[in-house]
Length: 254
Image 1 (cartoon, one colour):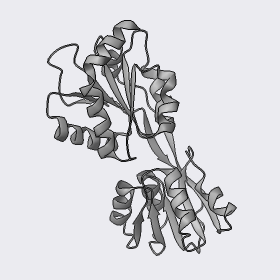
Image 2 (cartoon, one colour):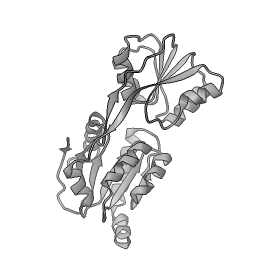
Image 3 (cartoon, helix red, strand yellow):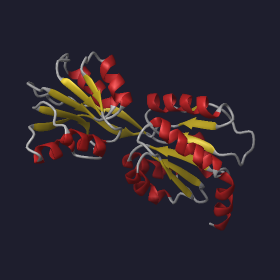
Image 4 (cartoon, helix red, strand yellow):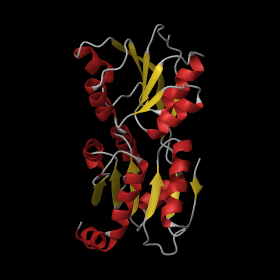
């Protein structure tokens, strides 16, 4: 499924392709429209969706750690227990946890590595259960156990691949630069399906790790978010748009 928020006025104007799952992409598209107005062409073409897994959920947990909104949804679908303390990777996941009925919710710094460091500096009440997907950028439970904290993880969802839309493929193959906001190393890997001969890809990366994972896309420019949150990602996209003249010169040299 793809939605187009605006058609570019000129064929050489940058286009943004959003590849996150549908709900997150639509929300981010609205944020882009609020920041940049209707002149920025945005395509929503999810390259993955979450499928919940029927894994058993351990009991007796005092602290839940959620690294994504999908984890909150998957846990809430498996059990009615809302008694544990909750620590979430960032603001969006924390809001999802509150909406799911958890009352004691703390917010982390926005990325899994930073969340792990935060938990180690201020150990939560144990036992700790880290709710994760099959793909994980950082093994938080292992970090906690190495520090002597009782912790385990449970995999409650997996991300399944979706094909890119025809519109997204056409945009990636066209003459205009394409901006890819990438929020995880796995998202960077999935975005490889958009790379085509002559593609002029620009990457806004959530972190240096995401930027490294995006090297295979051979982007003509990369901007890394100053903080791992959506506002900083939009700032990174703004820097890519502001540097368009330099990018045109660089693209001609490739």
